[in-house]
Image (cartoon, rainbow, N blue to C red; front, side, top):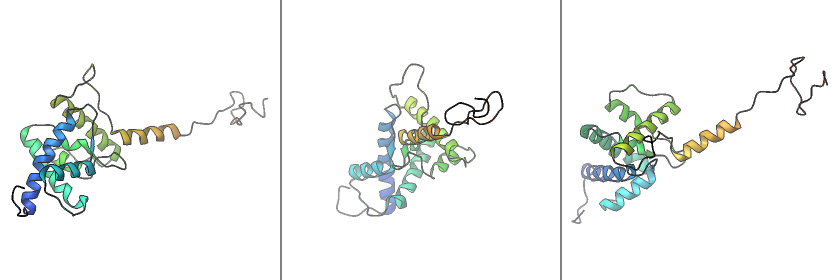
Length: 180
């Protein structure tokens, strides 16, 4: 702020929300880009000059709630879908507000919610002019989450091999002990 007076919580949230919107539009200019809550919080405070020592999870939710409502008011896609957790690449629990504001039912399944957010991110990239690949691009999970999903798919055990003659599970050699 220009003067030395401390803004009220309300004033800080308004300034942070306006700056968050601007930052998220910038993120939406790059296809498949996301930003973490921590990165967003630091950028918001840096740009506004309004700092807080309050823990991130205690102030970012109300700020992003304002962004959700403003995006809806403007007719923009939900830019808050671009914000993910550092550790797992998932949208936060506040994503339910995106659904509520849009008049959509809540999504309880975590992966289903992430796919909804991926669709919303694609809408953001398209709306805000990201350079898209031929065909208009595709929705994608955040990179960290996609890596986790890929690792889980690879670690799924393959079904055991079965002897085609006696229908017994084959040993690791692949040669049936009974049929030879």
